[in-house]
Length: 539
Image (cartoon, rainbow, N blue to C red; front, top):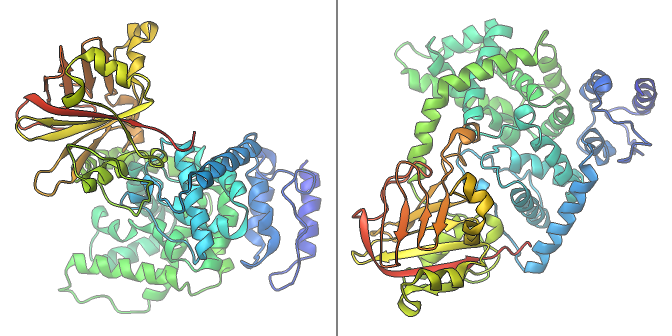
């Protein structure tokens, strides 16, 4: 196989140059190009992509990225995409945006896609979110998806992304903790492999403190996925789809090195310049360097790959060390963000649901808080207390068949709160499963309360959804129910618990959602209760 690949690659190299009008005959099939990603051929594949300086217009990318990404699931992924794309088109939705794009730190850069391309990009991303609901933080997903849309068919882009996302952080960073630690890892690698550049960074920042030095590096992903010129980023992607995260670190170091070569000719800041200002100056200079790289894209790559003994074991050791170091800080920041409410995006829904408890704006905000795939149809009212009584028997008869449900409660004191249940309440009857645990549901569940002053829902998501690294250890007490009780969220206390009849309940601080008591008084009397069925438009 290796010999066959060498012949194939040699033919391409012998017939091509960066300035030629060569039209590649490469197709996405094993007959034309053997799989470059097999273990015994990785070195050949790396050499091939590193040293072929194809311009961005080169047609090799109509086949290369797919070939190196062809795993056993590639064709199945393409079919899944086509099926879900048909569902989206038939739903009548013209433009939607996935929830994970609303998270701070996501790099929004479409690389000048035309309008149709942007629509296709949005659909690709919503299908990724639908098929991978566990994804909550992938900073580069928008940018790299846009690059793929420029060159390959959307179903192939989906299959390539599935492979990249299926290998944890080996390719794309997929958690806030990993991203926060990655800047420190980049700094440590700079110190190890480019000590002279590291010392210059200390001089420019007027500090030897690691926390100061890492500040201008914290947006290093943006240097690559947002600021690099298009031709440069495309060449980075050529290598990245084979080499993964480690290659991005090489490019990060190369950008810092190019900054050093330029800034070392300039005088240092005045001695009385505050450290914060020095750090911000370096930050802006690094952005400027990546936006207008002073060398060719091939020279930039050559600088990155010239680093010797750059081992993944070293990267992993630094990364683990710094993840442990910043874990507490990241967790504290996440908890603070959880109670800041919903960050609005320009979603399009069919119709906002009608409620006796909340107004249309609040109802729309609650729809935005639902998983994106569930926003394609209007929630349907199944039960309301004022017309159907306080009996649990009536409640279960009305809502048992709902796949997902939204509860809205108004108390006699005027408090409004509720929760989203991601599983059917009929699961309470599964004797075998309930013998193991009375709790069921998934990490998509959430609880909320309505801020009285602005009528905006404050959403409390599962603590594990924002920190995949901690998910296994996070409390997972989402839903519980019996003939005469229901609970939404538990752990240390129940977020919402209603027992005996539908007239009264309690709300306490809850570990599962890191939520406070949702009512002004922990024991509350119910004035009105509404339960809506949430149906997926992609089924």
